[in-house]
Length: 129
Image (cartoon, rainbow, N blue to C red; front, side):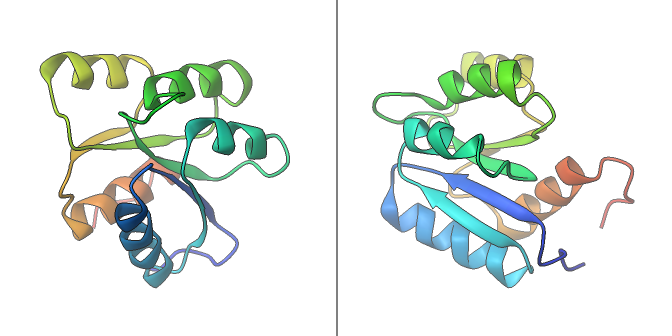
């Protein structure tokens, strides 16, 4: 399944290599992609152009992924979030899902699992693929 080119994804991760890899992956699936190195940088942009989905790292300096989730829940509740983390704990998983994450994946993330989670987050009614 390919995304519509107008479908905008935001990738928020402080690791430049991870950002680049995620950008390449979701671009290859047909998404328009914007990347952000910090949660604050992403939050400054979201009012101007709200993405259709956010791929979000939890553990970043400054504004954490949890902080971003909380801010999105207040101002942009309809934006689905797919969490990717290299620091999986039961507490992090529970907190991210309680804050509304549509999926919670661990790094290194499986490409197919991530794309399936993104498609499901954008269109929950679509059949699984």
